[in-house]
Image (cartoon, rainbow, N blue to C red; front, side, top):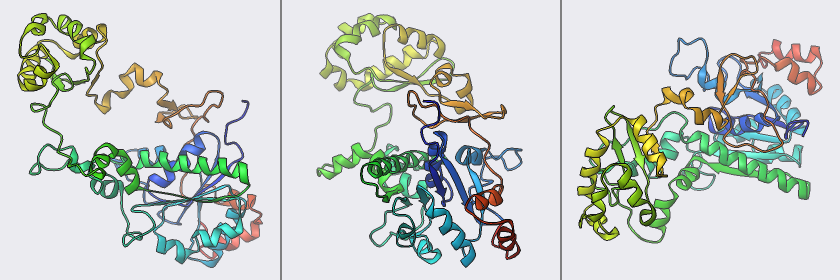
Length: 398
């Protein structure tokens, strides 16, 4: 294909923070024209939230807002809402995660926007869904996706252990991919019917999907125990181990009948196959703690690099416990297409997590400053220079 898949698709990102805007970012990666709506002055509250406030680059903002054009306009003013409505009338997708009462107050609900454009895909993202007592409640991925859905609780071994904190955006980015999927599904329906409509997703439902194995167990009435510690696992061959250079890896040797003998030979302990404690599947499960102790001693004798070569040589499935500072030193991450250089050649960013043969992603452009494209966006919508100047004089436009 000579042009990007979503070339000509017009998207309005009237959302904040991460999950809603990141869905629009994925659309932009494949060529959509995304207009980022921000309030004048401070802009989207996600600006400036990176780990280093003194850094010359706003790292998080560059990830979530690449490729977009910024229109800084005050939606509390009638003139600001009128400008947004004019943009909506010619748009394909409208993304918002504003709280439901705010949408009603600002004239951004489906009831306000869909009559302006029957082909519009209205992508609605919330913390807890749009029905029930908590529909209007605000939330972040740490509170709604990670904590509320059981994920935060389930990754600890005992109730009296502190729950683990989530990383920034850890639930937002997967949730954004879910919202993107809903948008594209609705675009496909529009191709068949000519009609737009509303798609919905939430942090809560995406978190339940991520924790689906445990949740499904409970839906069938069974209790879900905490994950056992590494010393209490039921299968010592699906466990994590520390190497002599203080690195960890996790092994997942599930095809024991075919792989066990070769594995034991490779680690230099073939006699364990004849040890009555480990000779059968049932015995290995019954004596899992003893096998963990044996393997702890084995894996502590060599550095990670050597064990990677040994385990790869016998086809054992495993993964190193990676460190984020090492990502650019990991050739496989680079070869997977996970990183892409900015179009200006300065630095890289994390690409959307899928690829489509024959449809290249755009070279990512830098995220915009607040209101960087306000005049151009409004001029494209039919505003004259005089009308744009009037909006600016009124304080509606930045």
